[in-house]
Length: 471
Image (cartoon, rainbow, N blue to C red; front, side, top):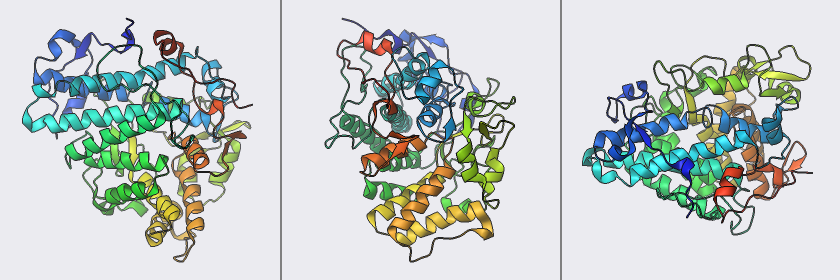
């Protein structure tokens, strides 16, 4: 019997802290290293520290410190990739192979987090009644996020087949290290993600310090349902978050003065006013966001993620758009431009925020042809924040089609560099509309990543993705 050794962790972290509901200081300790695996599941403090260590996995350079955003953006149509090296260039050119080391490093990272989440979930009995639900909710949210990020990049999107029976990823819901698990279907993966997030929604508290709350679970459910083109569910969850939810700073949407919120806020050292779930930094260990920043911004003026000239022109032509002034730079090259959205040292990385909820609620309402007044208000809030008094607002009697088109246009501008664009290309294509990325159809082989050879070689039941790119 073969075992997948890469997901076994002989050393688990423990600091001198306990993971609590409201203490931000726990993230000021390095949660890696110190306690032998055999000792981990003998004390509540150790299991709590294991849970805390998942956030270091989440914030690592091979996951939310730029890698998941970058891989998605390379498959999209907003960046210039002609000068990329071989591994990133393969992704941009939509022709990845089993030998791509960058993909291999990314692929294993969410599974490390998933494995640790499973270890926590299998040892909940050690945790006191007062914290058990919180621990379970956090572990299930993080497990769901890992599976969701993987299935979006390594499998064709929800809706690619009528019953979503096409291959997804390997689901890992226990700590078993058996290597013969086959790929679950995309439907099975989404079912598990939704089940985990609904459990997290039920078990996480309204406020949780720097850790995810039930509002983070609800916001992620809105994102998941929207990616599935299940607009009623997406609207319901996004509406709940915007009506009743709280940011990481404990503020409701109505309390953050959204239309006057500066665009330097989203990626800021203090954390964004609109973040619903974000990745905090660790004191004295360097900012978890450093690699994210370095991928998209280079002091030498030539980062890996160079902005396409056409996107720069489209997003900066209107001199009244505050985003154009704050987020972009012409640089010195005639081949590409620069995205300055991440031009601050040590920002907290937002995983999901109120702007995305506004975009989801508005487009879902337009697709349903219901609550159009709410959708108009949402898109006009976004426009007012961007253009101020010069904003050309959507009229109150606008058609559902006009609203949808306006929302999609603003979404491209708002979420640039956040790894969203290629997933929208795929979602729109799966919905039945014509959808392309740099001339390639949404469902061609190269629009998903090839699995690393390590996964294929260790797993006799594994079927790799078809190759051949998008030509």
